[in-house]
Length: 147
Image (cartoon, rainbow, N blue to C red; front, side, top):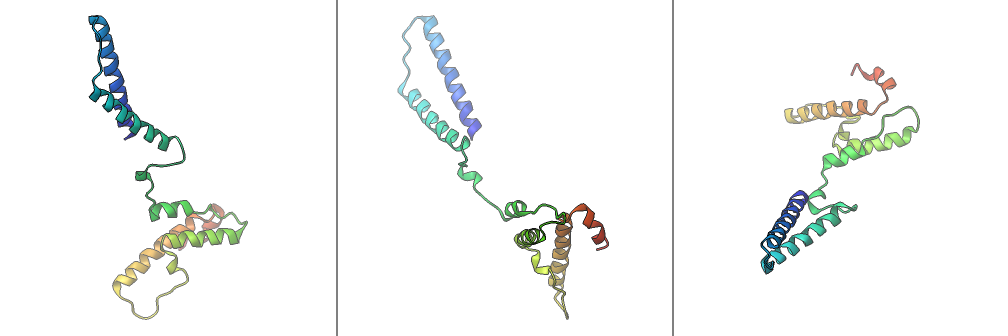
């Protein structure tokens, strides 16, 4: 939308310059029509509104949608290096909860379960283990590669 506004503004300025040059060459008085002036003012105001949104922290309404996936990506903790375990653990639990896979932690299905629940449990377990391995430091991953 912003590029469209800039293109319209450039075209309008270009047309204005061509008309002024033409009027100067022909040596007649150049009269700008009211409709053309209203058109220019309308798009100038729209352009200024767009510039205010893009040049500050403010975002236009189309950019304000925040998905769960984006939230989970923003919550991903740094890899665990061996220090500040409680901080890392809390951040990791929050991240896994946002990804909707923390429910498989420490749960082993007992008895018979429906095939669709078993499939969901297996898929969530794979995602859970992959996520945990991705946030453990490289030195500690070797111990968990057999999983």
